[in-house]
Amino acid sequence: MPYLDEGDGMKKVEAIVRPEKFEAVKAELEQVGIKGVTVYQVEGRGEQLGMEFTHRAGKFRVDMLSKVKLDVVVEDKDEQKVVDAIVRGAKTGEFGDGKIFVSPIQRAIKIRTGEDWRYAIEP
Ligand SMILES: Nc1ncnc2c1ncn2[C@@H]1O[C@H](COP(=O)(O)OP(=O)(O)OP(=O)(O)O)[C@@H](O)[C@H]1O
Ligand SMILES: [Mg+2]
Image (cartoon, rainbow, N blue to C red):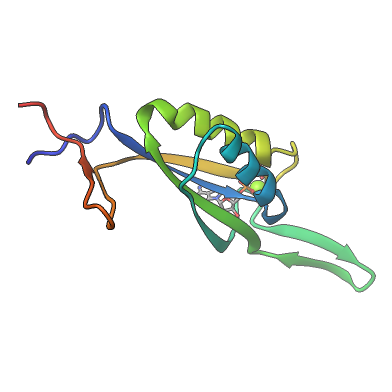
């Protein structure tokens, strides 16, 4: 069956947030009815290449910072709702608040029931 790259279907919203904001993000997602989520502990860097600290002994740099990554796969209609919920939970306004990436998902299978959801060009 042919796949469409885009269109009516599903999106994966990947978000990288501050670990201390994870609980707030989780609560915001729950608030808008999002149930399924995968979470990873990750390390990363952004525009500032980590963070510089000043100490008595001088300056030092931590070039990879601990972050939490979330994957949420939703129907297209819920994409913006998920993005908004993540931003509400994760934003402080300071450098390092994180990033959100959205991409199309072609197929999702629920193992228990065999429910199989894929993008297909209408016949
Ligand atoms: N271009 C990117 N590709 C993949 N991951 C990224 C990218 N930019 C940031 N990240 C991930 O997001 C985390 C948080 O990044 P951060 O919020 O510092 O982004 P930023 O672009 O530097 O924004 P800000 O200027 O607000 O700090 C990083 O630790 C990294 O894991
Ligand atoms: Mg940054």
